[in-house]
Image 1 (spheres, helix red, strand yellow):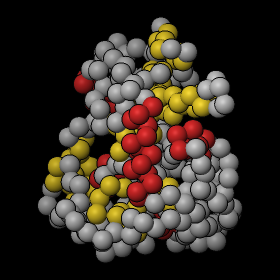
Image 2: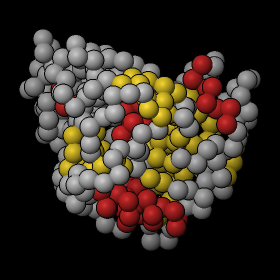
Image 3: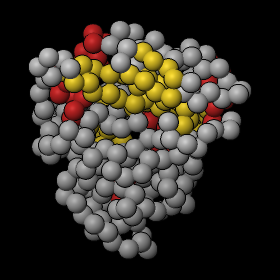
Amino acid sequence: MIVQNGEKMTVLLRSPFVDCNSPDWASGWGQDRYGYFAEFSIRTGPMYWEIVTQRMRWIPAGTFLMGSPESEAERSDNEVQHEVTISQGFWLADTTCQQELWEAVMANNPSQFKGLQHPVENVNYHDALEFCERIAELVPGLRLQLPTESQWEYACRAGTTTAFSYGETVSTDDVNYDGNYPMPNSPPGEYRQTTIDCKMLHPNDWGLYQMHGNVREWCSDWYGPYDREATVDPNGPPTGSSRVFRGGCWIVDARLARSAYRFRYAPGLRSSALGFRCLSSVKPGAEQVRAARSEPRDEAAE
C-alpha cells in the first residue's frame, strides 16, 4: 500500500495486528524493521522547490532502569539507578537536527563543521527552542520540543541495560568519540576531530542514529539529583541554573558517551560539540502502536 500526502510517497507495511494511522503532520509514514516512522517536510530554496525531510521514530511507552549499576565501568555518582516509567509514547527524530534542516527553518548556519547532513552545533538551549517554535509555523499540527532526560535515555537504551546500546563497550566504528580514550580494556580507535554525517554510523535497535557521540544533545530538564524511588514521567527540578545534556561527542572519551552519562551546561552556552534532537509528544492516530515493539515486522526496507 502507498500512503501519499502531497508530493511525498512512502510504502506502508501494515501490521496484521495494529491499525496505525498517520499523524496529521506527516508527509510520509510507514513501518520497517525498526518500528513505525513518520516524516515531516520543509520546502526551501529560492523557489521553494527543494524539500528537506526529517524522519521521526515512534518510541512506545514502557518502563526501564535509568542510570547505571554500581558495577558499570567508568560510572559517575550522579547516575543512581532507579526505575522510570514512560507512560506515553512519543515521536523522536532519528537524527540530531541536521544543518540542512536548520538552514531551511532558520536561514543561517552557526556550525563550526559545515556539512548539510552533519549535525547543527554551536546552538544553545534557547536556539533549540526557537527552532521548535518556527517549525510549528511551517508544518501545521506539528509541535516539537526537546526530550526530557528520561525520554532521552529510554530511547538511547532501546531496551538494553548495558553501558551502551551496543554493549558494555564501543569502538569508533560504532560511535564518533576521541578514539585515543576508549573504555577500559578496549583498544584505541580513530579520532576524527570533527563531526560526521548523522547517518554515517549504524542506528540503535529503535532506528535512532548516534545517540552516543558525534554531538551532545540538549534535554529540557534543569539539572538536579535523581529521585531514588520509582517515578513516572520525571522532568527534573522546577528551577535551576543549568540544563541537562546527554550523549557524548566527537571530542570526548568513550566513557562520556555511555547511555547513563549526564552532565549540564548553562542554557546560554554554545559549543561545536553540542546540538539537539527534537521530540513530538502528539500521539499517533491509533494508540495501539505502543504494542509495536513486540509484533512481527517486515524486515524489508521501506
